[in-house]
Image 1 (tube, rainbow, N blue to C red):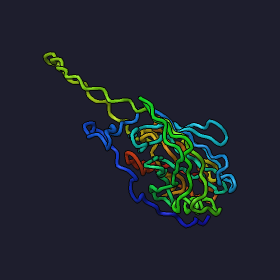
Image 2 (cartoon, rainbow, N blue to C red):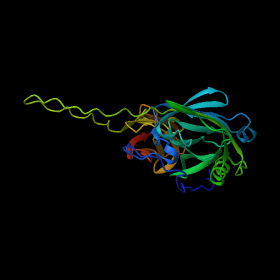
Image 3 (cartoon, one colour):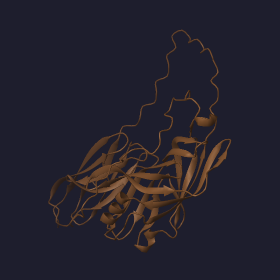
Image 4 (cartoon, rainbow, N blue to C red):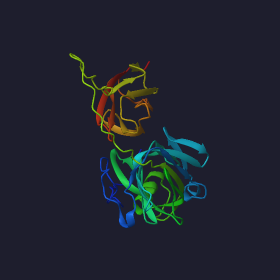
Length: 311
């Protein structure tokens, strides 16, 4: 099968600069506004009713920890970031991945979702894989008409309209074969995040260690590992590869005998699974399936399996 031309897109830059972790001592903004606060919990609801996606045969699905709440609506948890209650700006990391289903043979997975807001607009960024290469792009421009609702412990933005950027339109056109253009509607986002005020640090004297006591060793991250369901199988059947120990939300490429064919996203438990066909024309002997994490903690795993001689 011939591949469609790939789209290579990288982020041009952040829209706003918010406090980085550890910058709790930043000065107040103009007019005495408090500095940006670290986000603690929340979600972004993405509704695609009335968007141009359905007109071109494309539907929105998700991968955990995001969940679908209806046929055309999904919810993505806020994993971290910062929000400025004074200006309405935000830089939010969203969990899970958007999975676009459509006329293409394979779904388009949009992982590493990040929403950046400043003033009356912003952008939705995503990471994806095209022709075996991972990259981040500005998927959609975001505009809003109403100011966010600010509470003592949170901020809510409603009616954030998303429309494809030129990069996003090129990506969807290349993937689906349908014609998308910059400005096509991608739906509406409603976002709520918690912004608790930081608690003052209390000066405490650490307890004296008992003689001979040793500090507990930090838990080590599980080592990535992979396996196949069938160590040996016949041509014209299906094989399944399973990987564990990846960083949750990591984009993982799946290559068969060095040919990158698929992409998937690690779940909340760091696990991936992909079923693929073993062609009837596959040669007898040893083959390999490779899992390569291209986001998060990088890892490359290779698993051999044998294709037997057909009867």
